[in-house]
Length: 296
Image (cartoon, rainbow, N blue to C red):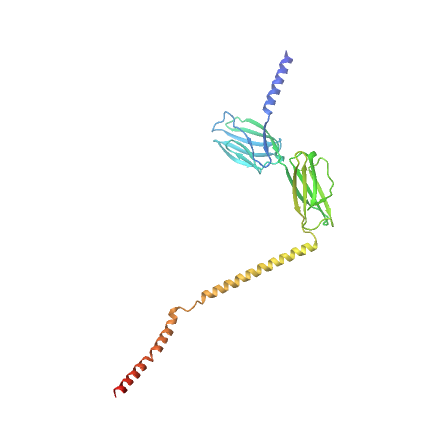
């Protein structure tokens, strides 16, 4: 009888533990914003002060804040984690595949005493959209380049990588069931500023993803050419500035020495009028002399 009671007690304890630790599943796509709700206890009042702490996978603390008078205070959250006030919870912006996991919200009643704890566990699932990235890896050998092409959001066994230079197919060592592909080229198999393309074909729906990259300029001749272009650009800029300065000086001089005004021209005009009116008395005198001659 005692053993049956103990068995029932342990079964009830196990049931309660499993109920409290059950997680609510939340699914979002990569790049979106995830909302993790944290509802307040049913007995919450404005006079209470509650401390809130968010953890992921039982590890580092992501965000802490307090709640009092229906408002949140003392926010201390990591990058991309923000407190959502209405409804109450935690927002994760620009969700990445690494954000998937178990999140635990621990709420502790600080005022009034005694303290009381309540926790909520959420499981975040991230649907990663298919995306391809291509990057140039650092190499100690300046005559060689190493490219890494990566694909996310697809099953590895259904992905096939190929590399091309324009329409030329480049040889590489494919890796089985891998989401990455590496291409290594050494001189003279590559040239400065040429474009290489990585293709990832998904056999399930026959979709092809591509990404291109232009190789940097590492040779001596290429660097000399870049230096020459830089010198030409500097000289052209200086010449343009000099032209603008000379143009400004010319405009400034034209505004200082304007054309003569009509008032300055009046004395000469008066002089011309006087000079033209002086012969008139001579004409009149000559006419009077002719009349006297006819009378005589």
